Image (tube, rainbow, N blue to C red):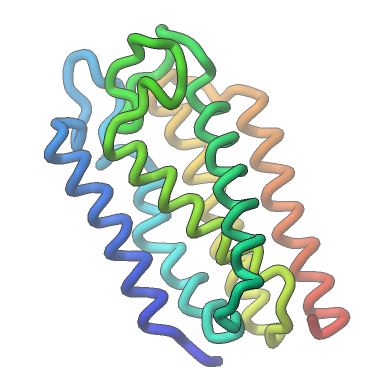
Length: 195
């Protein structure tokens, strides 16, 4: 299986930079008024430890070109929608490193610098995954990427909600099921049709 150390390093560096910004902003760890810091968010650890593996496996099969503009635009739109959904448009929601204060009750106005780093990271990550979905890869690559996503998505959707509130909203579970089912459907098509 081909492996891109560049994709691995870029992913790790991007998450580490986001963590450094969170630390500089004082949102690395939970504190009074901050329900969950960067260090306590399972999704950030998945971003750092799991996604570099998926990216390193998928990147060698993605040819760089203008066609990537499409996945980047779709990734950016989805990243904005996901962050608006997680914020929920309320001042009484979870205060984490993305939204340490929720004064404006608007996802973008309340977003911290670390939060903007995460929006950029998610944009790039989703663009890479969308590009991976439409290129031919060996079955082993499809299984590695899908296996990583199957572990990462629950870390990002279930653990933070549970840690911050002691419950997992149904909307998180629905998104989890949809995301993991999509990953496995893409893998099944790739393996069955060698796409």
